[in-house]
Length: 367
Ligand SMILES: Cc1cc2nc3c(=O)[nH]c(=O)nc-3n(C[C@H](O)[C@H](O)[C@H](O)COP(=O)(O)OP(=O)(O)OC[C@H]3O[C@@H](n4cnc5c(N)ncnc54)[C@H](O)[C@@H]3O)c2cc1C
View (cartoon, rainbow, N blue to C red):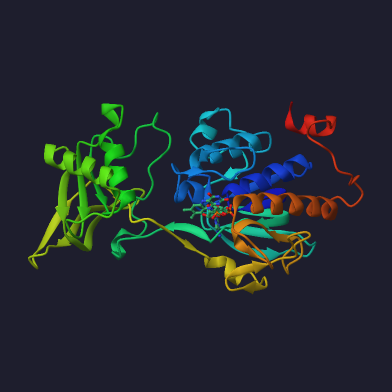
């Protein structure tokens, strides 16, 4: 059981800034996200595209913004000693930032706190909850083959940390998909800087010989296929052959239906499914908050929901005039943190402190 003043659900840009604002006000904070990296939409949908309307930042990419937000929140989400600054560079776990955890239940306790659980067994006892869940949890789209669910050698994400060998190093990796996500993964894997980290064989599997990606990316992948460093396999996955290993089930081969109507087997060591991510509101809709068209209704003074000590900020909330912009989410996170600080510490002085001049804030920031 992890005890905290505030639990932030979602490590997107607004959730990360929320953690910073709560920490600044002296509240302890934990952040959880279903994705294995921080950054929400900025990283899942447009990591390398430029953003031009963050105040004071003329231009930055989604990845750069995420790194800056993590760096800013570092006094309250510090990297563990083992990871050092790599954790922020690679948008990975830090102390108090729990990735790859889908929040499932939110249950009120008798003393006005919340018990929050995740699909992978984390349990939090939180005095307050801040929902920064965007359009919902980003979950990878699957191939629709039941045997692949939970198999230990089926992956969906590339790690940002290229200093560690990926699980498919020196083995046969099949990348499934025909869009931008699949082709950019094939290119990145084929061009991995350290030869020992590359797979021994790399196959791109798609249902037809037509890709949906940027022309330059497609040309680069076609060239790899032409050179023979990537094999192209056309077919529709029907089922999978699995065997049991100590940690669970592992896929050995995919059964593919070809355009000729024949079924054949594609043996593999690892499967990387890159069909994109789709946001699922999922469990959130069952927590009992007032919703309006799948968005959480909030007060615009405090961003409180209809549940006590549960606030909602960023793309997940709705109110008259709502705009789904980073700037608006950052404003909401600031007001929500101030409202919660008053609620959780009614006797503490509530006058506004500036980061430029306040020794208290400097101490919290460690500057
Ligand atoms: C293509 C594109 C371009 C954009 N360009 C701009 C721009 O130029 N300027 C601008 O201001 N805005 C832009 N936006 C909008 C901006 O990205 C969003 O407003 C912003 O990402 C919202 O941040 P958020 O933290 O509220 O939600 P998100 O970024 O969606 O993050 C929410 C996070 O919560 C997690 N989550 C949800 N439910 C759960 C759960 N139950 N358990 C665990 N984790 C959960 C999700 O996995 C996700 O990581 C753009 C959006 C898109 C799609």
